Image (cartoon, rainbow, N blue to C red; front, side, top):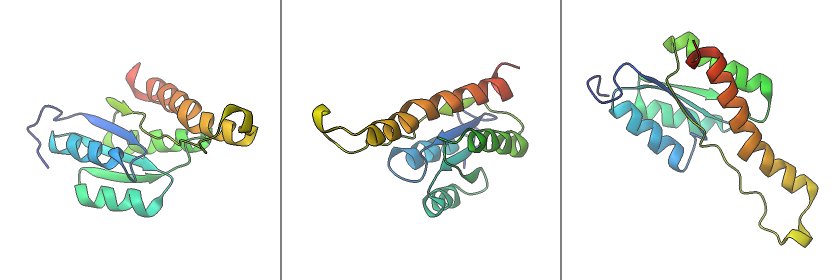
Length: 133
């Protein structure tokens, strides 16, 4: 990828990087010179996306609704690349599309866990591990 782009010398974490817009964003960041950690639950998808980018990318398999997985993913990124400059909280799960009167607590909580809680955990960990310093 390009070491002379707008993001040269920067390190990015992209969550939800196994499909959809996640791998596209990661590839774009790498083309602009960033090193990229691609994070997702799907090992096959995230490893393929990182392989497509090449040496400027690592694949990290993690369930971002689990605090210990978030801590591990951020620590691995910092260990490999030395710092973290950019975080893209792209991981999301739409849950089942239901009318509110049909909604289940399980579906609601699963959606909130990935759409909100995971983003908070990732942001908190990246700030404390790298950005605030």
